[in-house]
Image (cartoon, rainbow over all chains, first blue to last red):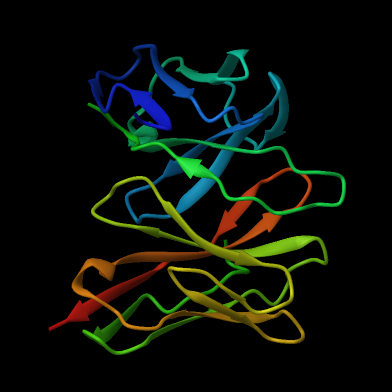
Length: 117
Length: 110
C-alpha cells in the first residue's frame, strides 16, 4: 500500500521527445513536490503545489510543466527533452504547514530515473 | 545548497554511535533543521527534524547548537542497515520547501 507512488520507475527516451511522469499520494496530504537528483546525488526542489495551487517554482526551464488535477496527484510533463535532463526525479508530499510554521515530514516516492539519449 | 555543508563520507563501527555533523550557518528563524537518508537510491526517508530544541525519536537524536548554525544527527547504535547517504537540510515552516546539503555517505562496518 504505497504512500507516494510514481510511474514510470525508469524512462529512457531520445532527445527532443516529450514525456510525462505521474505521481499519486494516498496520505491525504495537501502539499506535493517535485525534486530532481543529479548524477552527484544532489537533491534540489523544482516545484511545490498546495491544494492544486503552485506555490514554489525554482527557476526551472519552461520545458518543465507540473500539473495537479487534484490534491492527490502531481504530474510532471517535460517538453523537448535534453541530455542534461537525465536525472532521478522524486515526487513527495507533506501536510500543509500552518501559519505558525509547524514543521512536518515529507514522504518521498521511489523516484523515476530518466535517461535522455 | 552551498550554505548547508556536510562531510562527504564517514565510517562507523557496527554497534557504535554514529555522529553526523551539519553546518547551516545561514538558517533563518522560521526554518527547521531536517535529516533524511537515502538507501540504495530509494526515495529519501525522513529521520527527524527540529527547530531549536534537541529532539529524539525511535530512529535518532538531533542536537542543534544554541545559535542554530550547526547540528548533529546521532544514530545511537549503528547497524549495517544504517549504511546510507544522510542528508541534512533546511525546511521552510511556511512552504515546506526543503533545501538539502550534499549529503554524507555513512558506511557502517562490521
